[in-house]
Length: 572
Image 1: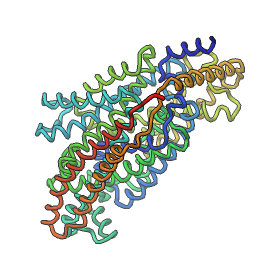
Image 2 (image 1 turned 45 degrees about the vertical axis):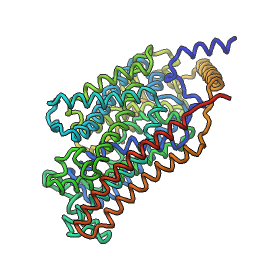
Image 3 (image 1 turned 135 degrees about the horizontal axis):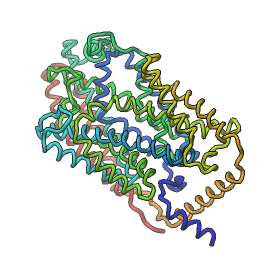
Image 4 (image 1 turned 135 degrees about the vertical axis):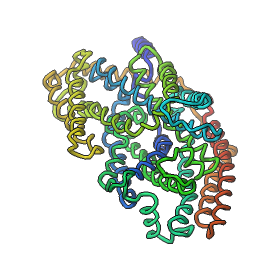
C-alpha cells in the first residue's frame, strides 16, 4: 500500500524534475551522434570566416584548435559528466535544490533568453539557404524586409519546434541521423573548393605537399593579418577560442541536461565527435570553403553568408547542409530552453513550455540581427553562466570532501540562498571586471572567474549553515531516492520492450545509406585528385554537384526509413 501511495505521488511530478530512470539511459553512440550533429552546425560557416577576420595563422589554426578542443572534451568529462551521472538531474532541477527558487528562476530566465536567441539565430541561418534557393534578397538590416523571408522562417521554425517537443530521444535520433552526413559534406566541400584556391594561388589544381598546403593557407585563408590590416591573434588565443567556445555547456554545466542520460561518466568523451569533427575539421573546412567561394565570386570571405559558401562548395546539397546544420543546433538549444522554462513554470509540462518558447523563438528568428550578433552572444553567455557552474561544482564535489553538507540549503528549507546569489553576482563582477581591465585574454576569463566563485561560495556557505550536519534530512532524502527508484522500476516493467531490428530490409537500408556517403566522398576525392586541368576541375565539380545531391536524397530516405523500422516495439 505504501509503495502504491509513493507511486501516485511521483506520477504527479513531471519526469523532467525526477532523476533519469535506469531503463532510459543511453550508450555512448547516442552522445557521439548528438554532439557531432550539434557541433557540426551552420555556425561553423561563420566561425570559419571569423578566424580569417581575426588574422590567425595556418600553423596556429592546426595546433591551436586541436589543443583547445581536447581541453573542451576533458572539461565535459571531468567537470560536467561526474555531476550529471551522479545526480541524473538537469542543472535547472539541481540548482533549485541547492540555491532555492529565487536564484533558480533568475538563472532559468537567463537561460531561456540565451538558448532561445541561439536557437533563433540557427533558424535564421537555415532560412538563408532557403532564401538563396528562391532568389529572395539577402536580409542585411536588423529587421526583415521581405514577407517571403518571414514565411520561410516560420516554416523552418515549425520543424525545429516539432522535433524539440518530443524530448531527448527525438533530439538524439535526429542528431544521430544527420551527424554522419554533416561530417561527410563539410569534408567534401573543402575538397571540392581546394582546387579553386590552389589555381588562384599556386597556378595548379592540386597542392604538391604539406609545404604547398601551408603556403595556400597562409596566403589565401589564415594569413596572420586581421580584417583591419593589423597582426592577428596567435596560438594562445586560438587555443582559448577552441576551449571557451562551449563554456556555457561544460564549465557552466548546462549539458547536465544531456549527460544525465549517460550510462557511464566516460561517455562524455563522446563529445570529441563534436569537437574534433565539428570544432576542428569543420572549422578548418569552413575556412577553406569560404576562401574558395570568395575566389569564385570575387568577394571577401567575411562578406559571404552561409548560403553563398555552401552552394559553391556543394551545389544543391549546400542548401540542405545549411538547413540541416541549422536545425540540429536550433533543436538542441530549444530543448534546453524548454527545460529551463519548465523549471520556472513547474506546474506546466515541458511540451507546453517548449511550444511557448518556440513561438517566441520563431518571432525572434525573423529579425536577421540575431545571427550577425551570435558570436558576441555566445562569448558573454559563457561568462554569465560559469559562476553558476562553479557554485554547483563546489556544492557537489568540494563540500563532501571538506566535511560540509551537500544540499544544506534544501535541508534548511530556504527559498532564497544568499551565498549562491551573492557568489553569482560577485563572480560576474569579478569576470567582467577583469575584462574591463584587460588583465588577460578574454577567451580565458572563465578560468579565474570559475575558481573565484568556488572560493567565495564555499566561504559564504560555511557562514550560512553548510558546516552543520543534517542527519535526519539526509536519511529522508535517501529514502525518497529509494522510493523513486522503486517507482521507476515499476514503470520499466509496464513499458513495452524494444525488439532489435535485424531484418534484411533494415540492413539493406543501412547499407544503402552508408554507400551514399562513400560515393559522395569518392566524388569529392575525384574533384580534388582527378582534376589536372582547370577544365577537368569544372567538369568534375559539376559532376559532384549533380550526383552528390542524388546521394544526399538517397542517404536521408534510407537512413530515416531504417531509423523508423528500428523504433518499432512489440510486447512479450
